[in-house]
Amino acid sequence: MSEALARHRAGGKRLFDLTVSNPTECGFAYDSEAILAALRHPAALRYEPNPKGLERARVAVTEYYSARGAAISAEDIVLTTSTSEAYSFVFRLLCNPGDELLIPAPSYPLFGFLADIQDVKLVRYPLVYDHGWQIDFHSLLQAITARTRGVIVVNPNNPTGHFIKEKELAKLNELCAKRGMALIADEVFLDFVLGDVKPVTFAGNAGALTFATSGLSKIAGLPQMKMAWVIASGPDELKKQALARLEVIADTYLSPNAPVQLATPVFLQQRHGFQKQVMERVRKNLVELDRRLAGQKTCRRLEVEGGWYAILRVPATGSDEELAIELLTNEDVYVHPGHFFDFGGEGYLVVSLIAVEEEFARGIAGILAAFKEGKTI
Ligand SMILES: Cc1ncc(COP(=O)(O)O)c(C=O)c1O
Image (cartoon, rainbow, N blue to C red):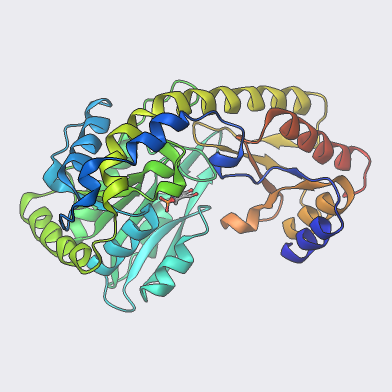
């Protein structure tokens, strides 16, 4: 796929890119004056090392949660430079080399690298689709061994776009609390809700030791600012111990820089304008997708409750990789094959809903044309 893409680009051919996930390259308007001015805070000239991060930034994070109805103490927050770094800290905190963490499949492909670097073994638990996605708890229970230290959930998941429901949260709490395991919840897409789902946040979850992580990459569309956090919660004594140890890990690096920490309250405010534009784009692209799908019977899309992606179910006549390469070569459309996200079988393509509308429409038209003309089937 990468070689085909490099050849395509080198050939100077047009490309309808339905894999885009970098919000700074999708034509969204940012308040550049406010963003740049926020980076000029006079306090940035002082070095005030604080393992958890500067208090004013952590307080801004608590305000983000109180706006969603969750009361979080600034003392339970550790700032990091990305959710990826937050994962690394939590993996290091919970696991000795060779210990295991359960991850959902399908899901986001970064986990493998993060786990390898921390010598953690990932064990997959399946999500099942039946008019919507849900955790296959039977398989999850079977995946637990004496070395399992925790369960990772992505809420809403990337790329399936489904939220964890109250009942699932209760089950996760019960099974983790019973076995002394932790919950690790990635909530970077929590604000991007479609339909009438009421998202439940894991931030402040009391039923089991929990680490909820999020950051500015998605919330405010500012991945270049490198600001994220992890929030510890759960039974008091466990939370206290976890935070004390997390503090040691964070103190070893003191990663977040002062200008960005000081600008975080402003960056978080910027989320309103950004999220409005994203949701308008996502909704428009979904309408366009459904309009085009209605004109044929070969492909369909799966239900999506939130996030920036949609999953197309397409005829599984070869590997998804071959199909994606064919779409690139014949139709100039770049899509992610399902295996990239650990789908259990063939016949899945993932498309980004934040692609610029015209590009999205052309890309979807290309995919459907390929099936219609029998080129790929
Ligand atoms: C589900 C999920 N979690 C985390 C990340 C990474 O976020 P960060 O830039 O904070 O490391 C991404 C990025 O695409 C993501 O999709």
